[in-house]
Length: 310
Image 1: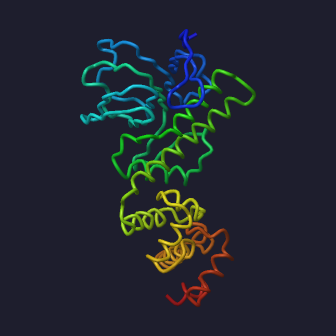
Image 2: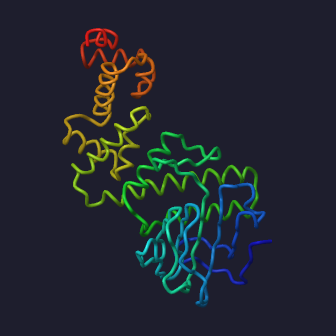
Image 3: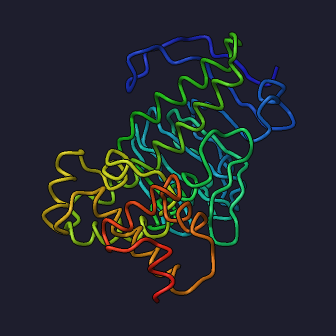
């Protein structure tokens, strides 16, 4: 076995359940993670004494999530040192330098999860066939991850709960545990994106927030947006979000979105020879009939008539 046990059990200070034993699972060395080739490393380490050269600065491989359970750490990412406390999540991108300037881990307990993922040239996240997150949702998550240089999500207890569930599933080997772990990995991406967005927008004045939402909507018009999803992305409750959007733009969120879709459809009708069906689907309408009805309601013309006369 490539994971190892400690003799003592304890109550994790940050969870209301007993934390399981230490383990260190490495891709290519640990049979326990072989069903998930996208998991490069999954470990829980309890550091009881400082050891020299145990955490030297080096280039990070994969997308790494480091969650602190106990202790206080001083970790450095790309020459910037962060003080990390219990329940904090550290995110390290592929290729970033990561380690400790002292070359060693401080005393404490943390979880490390490293995933082998692909980023396209435009920094678009590609998770692979194992994930149930749609391509359009992966693009949205990518935008949130890359829109700001954010290396730490403070007090992110929910992440700790997710990795605890992954740990439990991996060692219990119950029915459908392989699928369940992939679902939990999807949950990690979703909740990290939501929390990053929420933290970024706390204290931000709404016009700036609205501008960022507007840009995201324009770049993903084909996505089947809901008010709940839009609100979650910028870190507001649906009621507050709806009120703020209506006050700022003059339209409820979905009406504002429809206006953006029609605006883009007008541009495509004028400047391309794409079929009406393609334009309808690209701008987020579920059928050409739905597109035609909405377009005529807002412009007074059918799409075909508009194209013919423009």
